[in-house]
Figure 1 (cartoon, rainbow, N blue to C red):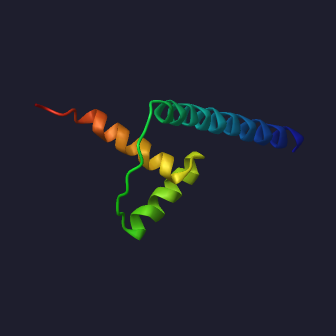
Figure 2 (tube, rainbow, N blue to C red; figure 1 turned 180 degrees about the vertical axis):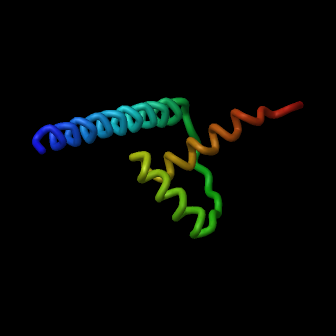
Length: 83
């Protein structure tokens, strides 16, 4: 029984390490985006969109406004402007 307990603890520790490593990478990416200079804008989003963004951001360990900015940045990068 003690061996199963230590295996479970080891698995939980590995999971936690992966989770925090992932959060650290996301936070690093968010900080890079914020450091590039910015300007405040106002947009209207539905309550359900904001709620979903908050849930997803919380799961990733981010603030929801930073998460929305990251999503927008990634979407704009996938579809470059054509002149």
